[in-house]
Image (cartoon, helix red, strand yellow):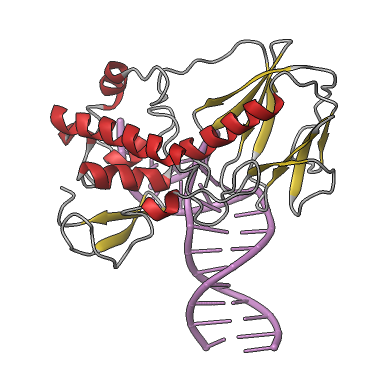
Length: 256
DNA sequence: AGAACCGCCTGCTTGC
DNA sequence: TGCAAGCAGGCGGTTC
């Protein structure tokens, strides 16, 4: 699933590809997605906002694309529609297809006012505000990491990886985590996310970059998807269990 | 406040 | 082989 590193990868590729270009056409192939009447607008920039792709136009509007579970953006020179194409933005040089088998992805246009969230770990993260808001919460740390209003960009795969690297149990209450451990979580988060960006994301099933290539971070995972395999820290077995309706992977022995 | 569940969706895997 | 059930889960919503 596209989380922060995957969306960051896409935004960087998309920015290089379409910034400064003029939109020739926009088309929706799915009644769930809006038919946007935007033509002749110039793309100023493509930026990531949490897990959202924000395409900034020269009139100040932004097109916000959220890929949810199985959404992908694909650049093609030709207009032949890939299977499961749901939405399309065309340029004289080629086309950006939104491909999404499960149709969870969303597209919307918002006004000029850009949101500048202070909860994105890689952009202006306000650690004090985060700890004031969530540091005393009784919720499990994994659920806090997955809460996009608390901290933007982390999804199920990287939450497991971050807690494994931090050696903190996903079941620990936020309120029971001390300052040293919070530091460990913040450091691990940056390390995991930046490392995954370098590898152009984690291609476990659906994820592909703008050019249809797999990422390489699936080879780096130490917790997610490794149930029954040995923990690289202590040799004990990685456990898979259910937390908040999703699977959680962790080491019972070394994640405290 | 927080946990648990649902609906949105479709493709893939599993079990009989 | 075939078909149905189960599973995957981000996010917004409701309920307990």
